[in-house]
Length: 79
Image: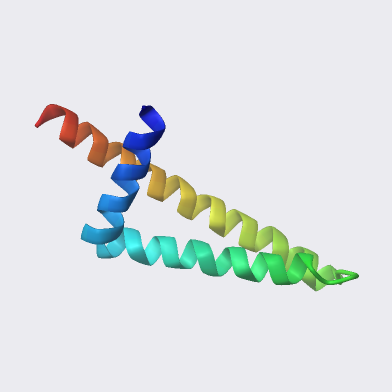
């Protein structure tokens, strides 16, 4: 049940929050860039640095998005 509520909160924020949509778009962009780097047969040192940077950025966005979902869920529980 909690998973359904989480998905509903994410869907609501995707529709109603420009900030959330922007973060989700960036998150997807970082994922695609990571996939491209990881698909290379051999990664250069620059690739490894870029991979590390992208993973940190992606995780930071995920954390921010999770906080937005938690705030939304808390607000809807109180209301």
